[in-house]
Image (cartoon, rainbow, N blue to C red; front, side):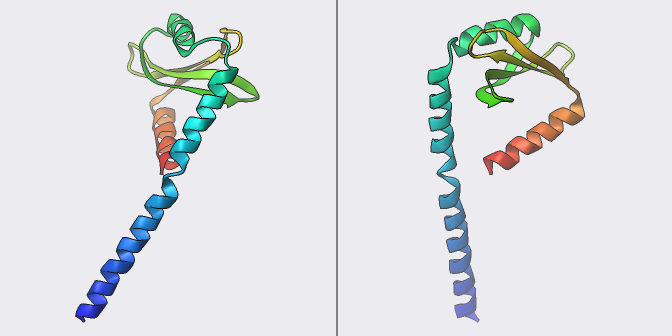
Amino acid sequence: MKKNFVLAILISAFLTGSSLVMAKPTAPQENANEAKLARQAKITKEQAQQTALKRAPGTVESAELEREHGKLVYSFDIRNARGTIDEVQVSAITGKIVRVEHENKQQEAAEKKADQKKKN
């Protein structure tokens, strides 16, 4: 009985450790990808953020540089005075607003859930 218990603990530790090892490479890959995209950008994140905040005043909750629909954009989630999120995308090449989308509470929850899945 004691052997089975020890064996179960060892197997559990091995499986947990191997899943952690497998999860690690994504962070450096994401950093390398973002650095590659940053070299292609013509404007800074700060410049893009100023443009986004003029369009949708509030508090920036998250910001990322990404390629979406073939365009290099800075994407900002901005919490507005009503407490909801406006997602504003600014072209990293021209500095112009590409898209603005207002998220309701359901969309916001779905996006958070999707982001959590990405991280895991």
